[in-house]
Length: 340
Figure 1 (tube, one colour):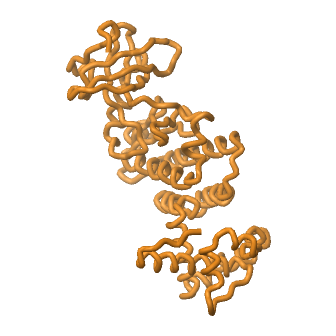
Figure 2 (cartoon, one colour; figure 1 turned 60 degrees about the vertical axis):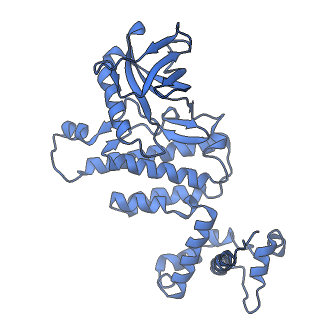
Figure 3 (cartoon, rainbow, N blue to C red; figure 1 turned 45 degrees about the vertical axis):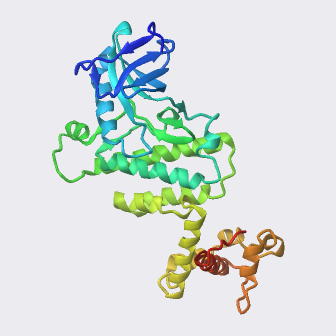
């Protein structure tokens, strides 16, 4: 760092909050930019690229609030952790320091949310939102893409002026009840709805062909009405099959097959109705065509296993995938892998 641009952090409670950094340097100050870039230098030596969010002098309380609340949630990998908050005397502003990041945009979204493991990426963000609420904090602006940043290919959530705590809401409603009032629940649900809307917009704008998107978004909308409790809604959303990695999804299908065998699911009116849904079953009616099976030789071996036959029904597709999962577990015990 050059001495001309370097600013040393003084341990003054009025100007600096929490830092293991000795100094920072801003590349080029632009008053119109929502954040600045530069470098930070650590007490133990070494430096790294950084970003600095800007707050006006009159926004000091907001900047401190964001720092304090975010620092409390630093153990969640989906939240961008701040290094320090300080008053930048030359420009009469407060700056909040983070690792260098990119704002979630069309340029970077291809490698973060819209990838082959997109379900896993989305699930992690859903879990982060759940964690934020567990800390009695509400984001309030997850519909805006600027509140998502990317570091090393991973999406993280960042907070802004919309951040609210439970105490903030209680003051507004003048309700000091220990139990969550209905408004708190709706505020939590709004964060998830905002995330859903951002995701829909991102997928639509990029024209991404995500085959699970319709079932996931439909499940999301139905769950809001179906599950009366917040925890039930969130847990079922996170546990949706499209949010699972391939091996976990196969395990999920295996459990469904076991439930059918034990009549737990076989007698379900909802399950029976779904199997009779022509639009739904038509999507999977040709799953066992020879051409498709030939694309996965090992799975073809499972399909033609002696003593087992399958029809082209959704029910048999579930049975086949459950058998494939059981076969994969057997291979794993033998130190082998069932590859497509």
